[in-house]
Amino acid sequence: MPRLEGTGHGPVGAVADWLRANGIDPIDVPVDSRISIEPGVSADDRRIRYTDLLRNELGHLRHDPATDRGCRSPSPTALGRSASDHADASAV
Image (cartoon, rainbow, N blue to C red; front, side, top):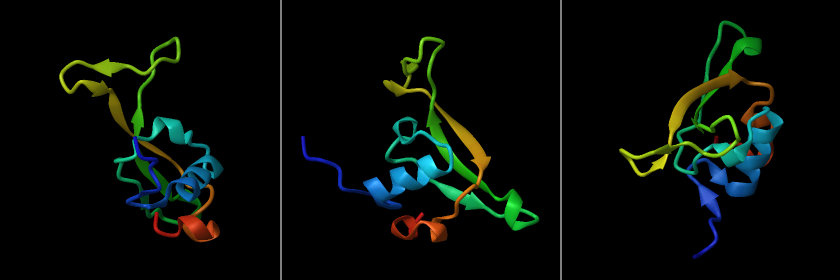
């Protein structure tokens, strides 16, 4: 299987680093997830919206038999570090 080099948001490593800098574990964000930054009333209340893979109480990915893939949920989180603060993830 070929190694994934990029996402729709930029190079895999740069996007993963940016997600971690914002408190998001990149292993729980599907590579085809749409990631967006939602504006807030001020710069301090902007949020990252992304799709999160859901885990059960044991930490295992939950499986959705209807789609035959992991269960997903939209997840907003506070923006701690913008893409412009992380030069390699500026495409996010």
